[in-house]
Image (tube, rainbow, N blue to C red; front, side, top):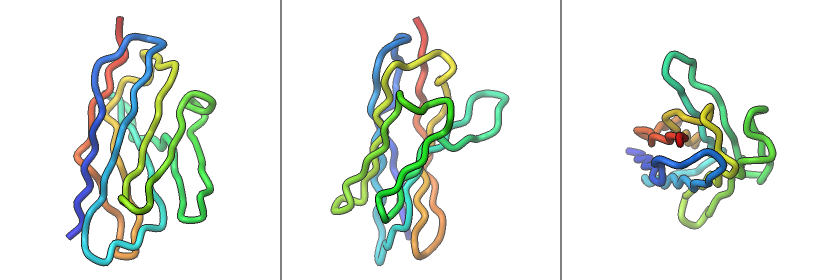
Length: 115
């Protein structure tokens, strides 16, 4: 069984920064890609960033230049550094792990950007 646990969400003022973490655990966990998605109230879940096994990355258009995804393979952990946060970044952020045994989601962590 694969477990995915996010942390690091919270309340921040516009222009501030937060760092999200996501740790995956499980037997024979061979990870192909690690991603962050987000879902705001009344909106569909959208891709924020992906980092693949070959280290290539992709970002959603709305976060390019502000967010950075990184990983620690030894710890099966992925991070999302979020800078210059805006009110429209407010959402629940979900971690997604694409592994040899399938797709796995975390429970989500709330990020609220407000003054």
